Length: 104
Image (tube, rainbow, N blue to C red; front, side, top):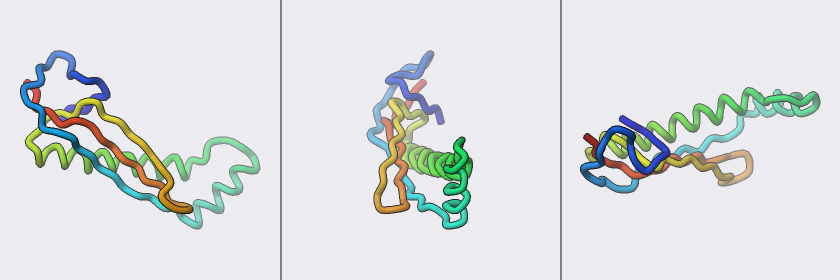
């Protein structure tokens, strides 16, 4: 599956528009990671536990978007975007979305 943030795929021609596709997941904080993150805020720097959690969430959301595109018969997704939002205290949603197409 070709995944791009642009409106076209370089070197390919879009033959068919398959439609909007998306994938999402909601991740909640882990109590143990919260304690480590709290300690990290005292000394500064990257909170790797959250970085890893959000990377995993992005991969899940992208994977679900790809599955949605495959079900529609697409072999590429253009104009891909990722967004995040807080859905409740201590939980965030990651959504990946784009336009599924068939390219040659």
